Amino acid sequence: MAQFHVVLGPVKTEFKLLGIQYLFGSLSTCVNADSLHKKIVERCRKIRIAAKTMRMRKLLVDMVVLSSIKWTGPWQSYNKCMLNDWCIAIETAIWDSPPCPGRSPYLFWSVAARLSCNPIAALDVETLQQEWRRQCSRNAGLPVPDRPSRHADAILKQLDWQISESGVWVTPCGQLRAGWVSDSTFRKFARLSWARVCYNQDRKFSTLLQKDHEPYLGFLYNVVLEGGPAYKTRNAMAAATDARVLARKQVEETCDCGEPCPDRTHLTCSCQACVQPPPSRSVDENRMLVPLVVFPAHPPCTELTPNPKLVEFLKLSFEKSGQPPILGVDGSCLVSPKNIL
Image 1 (cartoon, rainbow, N blue to C red):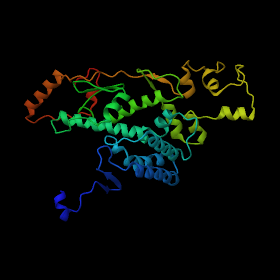
Image 2 (cartoon, rainbow, N blue to C red):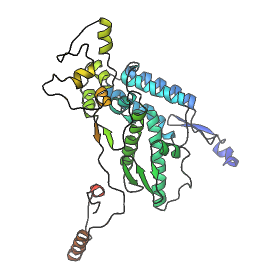
Image 3 (cartoon, helix red, strand yellow):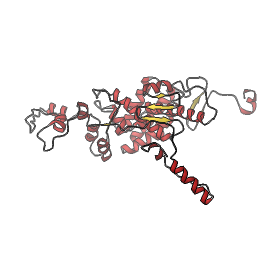
Image 4 (tube, rainbow, N blue to C red):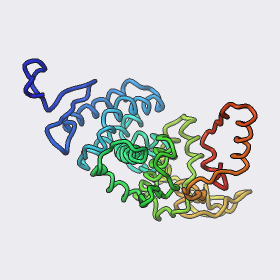
């Protein structure tokens, strides 16, 4: 097209479309990272000023901050320092204050902000989804690139995902086959796997999450949704300050069971003087108020076997009416106990 520059204009390696700056002069970058960094920090600052509720701040972060960066996941990588700055800016915007120093990153991104607001998770999920769509298109016979994104292999290894020779995606949360599930289901699996990685990297937890266990966050979800004083949200994020405040004020308390100076964990989970003593749980479960439950078993993703009775019924229906039968399914056939139609 360069030979038609008189009519079309000069060829440019960068341009702006819908507010996003595109770069095509390099094979490893598609946006100006420094310029994008300034915009993200500034937008987070304005969101903190404009929005009054946490729900609205999370919505605005997803709409005007993450939408400008997550699409670059398959094509561009950012340095760790810049990603950490984005995380802090988004946390500050959602908290409406600087992040609590003792918070649990896993609980914040899983409960208060949700993983969809984490820039690192958003970039990783978008990269995996691009590879997922590539394989879906290849299975459908459409022309696709021969090689996956250069970031996809690293993310698959980090999330402990594997792609078998038959095209089945084996994940800690179950198995997926390209073309069988929707994009929303794929994103859900990716976020669940990313949450497990975030749990294992959280220094507030002393042990790693076992493969057959899953944290139950229902209680903390209710605490955040109810709103109220800020200390409630701090407690839900494992950033309570009651013990430090009592120690600074030199307040001496004795538990009903005789324990001198009881801490929050003892009063909540360990005191035997309660009418109904709580069940015995691990140290992490008691400290974080996050019980671990057994992860439900997922059936293997094998080829579907048609139900002979259903097939015969459809044939008879067609022979009697002369019209092709209309069968409506909602996807539940893929998770039936025997995995058959």
